[in-house]
Length: 130
Length: 408
Image 1 (cartoon, rainbow over the protein chains, first blue to last red):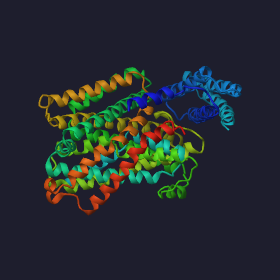
Image 2: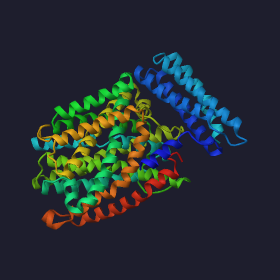
Image 3: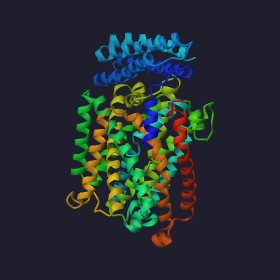
Image 4: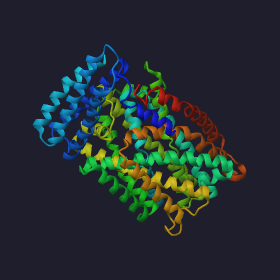
């Protein structure tokens, strides 16, 4: 059990980025950006709490930052380097938006602007995933 | 009248205590991935846990012995030891995930540092286990867990396609990714039939001094408590399907799950969801903690029981304290509670036959159970579920590897 678990955990965010991995990672970026948009919308409407907004944006931002870091470090299959770089940039931009929300958890104007920023990021990541 | 009131309170506590971190993670993720298609699996899982819990409770009420006592007597030392090791490994993983879940909920509610909250959570759980009596532990966490009913309200407010929801109760596969579908089906069954639940249920029956006079109460608790508790699982999956599936969101954190109530119900929905999740995972932490200590004590023949003073059952007390400290240290390493939950559920599936076969054998043993041995219905269901358990146990790890832990 421990060996299987260790092997699977070691495989997270590791290995060469091929077409399949790029698709999966782009889907994850799109999912994070879409969730971020939904979440920021709640904050913008004043339907969240300060601690939840701060901690949840930190948690989601960390997932995006880890992905950006992994996409920047991992080897890439030939021919898809530009797309992988784009995906890495998108993940970093998603992380930045979450950081803005984390730094201003009760500021509804910031939340509105973050919500608007997440839309195009999600669309772009979605296109990469296809 | 008092008795009816007591039964009603017990059932309420059972509903609130039904959901643990495995149910939360797998039900919402299954909804977000396949919509309502896997609702039928929840029904299968709930009937399974009702079947075996009823057997466990009956064995305890008739023999005044809990499951692991029976395992030791019925399957011998070697097989019993393998069962014990498997149960303790799965238990430790589940406990770690639950303690991590408690700390995450506290952090989402308070904003305090995670590591501080891990320690506070462990201390608070230890104090509750040490100070509060068994009945009140069940009540406090069961009633607190009822806040999760906010997900039932959220499910309605999200206006799902009720026709599709109804169709979800009919087994069907409407996806190109059949392996992923099978992985989630196995995970949902594992989450519903987690071994610690039956160990805890049967030991709890002994703690509460059940006798054959309580067989009706046992049946009622198992059928109504778990049955109605299943509604929470349906609600979680419907929320996953109605809110996350269409938007392509893969809810990867406990905070994301809480958003399932926040979006349709606003801040009050969010707070109720977080409080409900907190009580549910804290209650499950205590159940797994006790379960680990019960299993070891019953296998080794130590004095055990929360009804005894710590000095009256010192090795039992020491076991749960050590388990809690180990879980706290494991969470402190920064392990992801949600990912660990998925591992714990899948590995618990592998251990299911070792848990349920001895129960089936003992409950069916006329020398042991006399006129209270399994009837035709209990045997049919018991054997049917044991076959299902065997199949899912054999396929769980290959499916986990082939789907990259449900990533597709």
